[in-house]
Structure formats: structure tokens, C-alpha cells
Image (cartoon, rainbow, N blue to C red; front, side, top):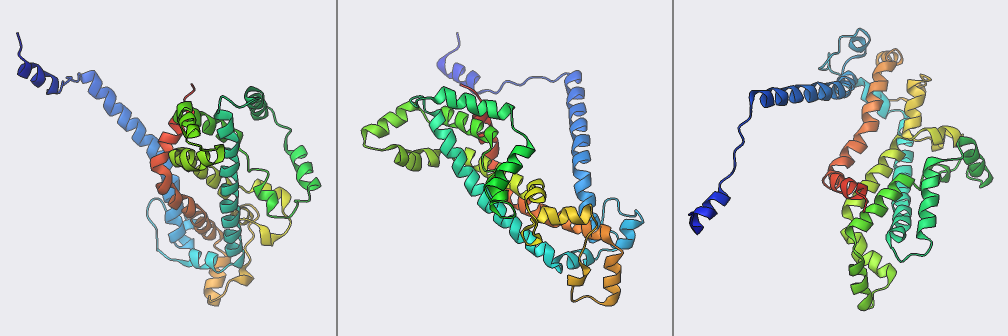
Amino acid sequence: MIGTEGQKTLRERPILIQETRADRTFGILVYVFLGCIGAIILYPAIYILSSSFSSGAAVLAGKVWLWPVDPVLTGYRGVFSDTAVWTGFANSLVYTVGGTILSVCLTIAMAYPLSRKDLRGRSLVTFMILFALLFSGGLIPLYLIVKNLGLMNTRWAIILPTAMNIFAIIVAKTFFQMTIPQDLYEAAQLDGCGDFRFLRSIVLPLSTPIIAVLVLWAAVAQWNSYLPALIYLNSQALYPLQLVLRDILVLNEMNFNTIGNLSPTELLHLQNMEELLKYSLIVISTVPMLLLYPFVQKYFVRGIFLGSVKE
């Protein structure tokens, strides 16, 4: 018989599983496959970044593959000297910050009550939300609503129509159901805690992962959106950065008259190097979201996982 010390030693000893040759081969193939997929996804970003720092002649000649060729900052100087880019950047910040705050507040205000089993009409409202997720009126009814509300050519036309994301509501609702037990609310109610105070003091501090997910979803959607601005806005002073980028990429419009502090030679070079300006502006428009992601990344996986598991 094995004594107590022997049983403890057996329990603490790690169990090693010998890998077979087939397991090792499969593991190597998996890493090779994932490496190829990663390279396919990463290479376009590296190419754009390298092209933005290369000379226009090298970009047009196809000499840029992985590293910058004849590194210059001409493209970034031209982009930052264009007043339309600065205006679009400021507008995108307004739309992203305002739209994200409004979207997160409305999503929580809708999702938390639906997660409470004591809410009357909860099943009906949930059915209506799911119905709206599967069936929508389309673009024309939405355009008519925005027009009849007098929101055309205003900032609200960009923020309000996309404030409610039905999929985000469903994920947040499931998160609250999985994370906030009914017993916790009953205990707080016995201590005299009302619904709004319970939401503010208990639910929100415990919901950091899902709030981070909602912030990231709303911010990325608002920052990358250009179709609502293309439809609802007529004034270039209200254009977001993505619409400015679209004009440069698709319509090849660049106001060189607003570019200053450049010599005639550099100005002529910029006029013939539209591709270089495009790559520089793509990098600039991508940086803000890349800076945001590290702050919410640690909550992202947990929030998505808990919000996607059904009861």
C-alpha cells in the first residue's frame, strides 16, 4: 500500500504524455499553415507602410516589396499640409467619440433591463429585437427618416442612425445574464438599493469586459464608416477622414493649392505621386484604432466569450 506521503507525491508529479511522430508532424503542419495565413494577412499592411515611406518613383516602378526604398517623408508632409485631411480627422474624432459614448449608453440601457427576468414584456421586446436583426427596411426608408427628421447635412445624421447595434445588445444582454446573478440584486434591494443605483454602483463596475467590447465595436465602426457620410452630408466641412480618403483613392482628388511650405520641385513631385499620398493617408487613418486596441485587448476575449454563451 502507498502511504500518505507517496499518494501526495503521485498527485504532485506531472503526467507527461509522449507525443508520437504523427502528433509532431501535425503540429508542425499547423504552425506552418498558421504562419502562411499570418503572412498573407500581415504583408499588405507591411507593404502599405513601406510604400508610404518610399519615394514616389520607387512606388510607381514597383521596387517596393518589404522595406522602404529611398526613404522620404514627402507623402506625410503633403498629407499633413492639406487642410481637408485635418478637417476630416477632427470630424472623425467627433463622430467616433460622440457615437461611441451614445452607442454604449443606449446598448447598456437596452440590454440590462432585458437581462432581468422580472421585466414585464421581456420576451416580446426580445422577439422584436431579433426580428429587427433579421429583417430591415433597407436604405431608402432610413434615408427618408433621416430627411424627415431634418438631420440631413448635420453631424447627427452620422451619429444617430448607427447608435443602436442589435447584435451588441444581444451580446451585452447575455453577458449581464451570465455575470450578474439575481441573488445579488435581491441582496442589494434588501439594503435599500434602487435599480439605477444598482446599475451604477454594482453592474457597471462588474461589466468592464463587455463595456470594453462595446467601446471597441462602436469606435471601429464609426471610425471606418464613410457610406452614411456619403449619403447624408453635402458640406465638405463635415466630411470624416474616411470620406476624404475615398475621394483621394477613388476620385483622385487632392487639393494641392492648400499645400504649403513646399518648394516648386516638391509640389510638382507630389502632383505626380498620388499613389504615395494614398499610402500615407491610409497609414494615418489606421493609427488611431491601432492605438485603441491595446487598452481593451485584455477584456476583449473575456467579454466576447461571456457575452456569447447562452443560458
